[in-house]
Length: 392
Image (cartoon, rainbow, N blue to C red; front, side):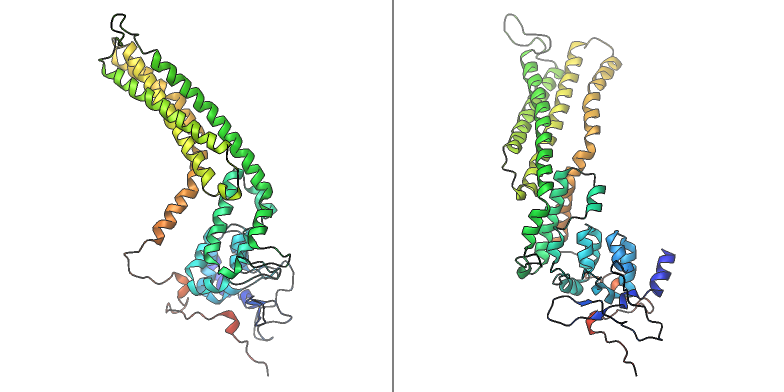
């Protein structure tokens, strides 16, 4: 970061833009000449169509520290646009760099301005949520359902951050943001439907198997019944009570998870269903399935204690511990999948917590509001108000 800070201090590529005060909502675009007169060491204008400034490159690849350093030294650079009219928000959303979005979001006044900007093709930040980069798609190895859910949650969040008029805004192809989003995610939606169908089917098979075993165990109690009274012979042993409770819980949770998986299989699979309904139902069903498997293992361990109660204690503990090996292995294999299901809900909880009133006093923003030389508060000036030195 020391080298990065040094280079950022010397870099003025963000100045290679000219004001664009026309009727369009863009802040500024590349012009034919430099924004700084010749002979004063000003930066040369970026003429290459593919040229990108360090700020936009850092935003594209998610280099949060570099973005913060650049905006800390040159807050005006936040309004910089590339040759396609993309500002930092366009780039962050297009490449799904959520942390970069958070950095810009802290700069409240620039955030309000940047959300109103459109690129050269008329795309707002809402439209950018529907533009899927092929290189990003190739490197994203997550399941289709979770990728689609992330896109839907991003689109919902951008809707709240955008002005109402941009929801129905048409780009140069005559598409609203919602229409573009639906078209670009059509293939992902089909893949997500197939994925969640297969997952629900496989999990429901396991849940039915667990329920069958638990139901059969309830009618073949350990030790058998008393031939005279019909009551179980081991009724008064503590381990028998554990067996009954855990077996009942295993059956209950397994059947409930089957209902959850069946509700997924009978879903109409609307696009909005992939945002909350289907992932939440899948997570609930999978959680209940894991609990039912563990309850079945508890019932099996209690049966071991009942059947070999006259053996040494270490024998009973060892055999009971082995009973939990399948359930532990099952949970270990699916832990990453379960964590990925929980991730969007963790984000929702964080957002809810941040929306609550804060007890701390209002603190100034990070380095983006301080002058890098004096450390004094920096007055932020929009880039289009800056005027280049006049040439004589």
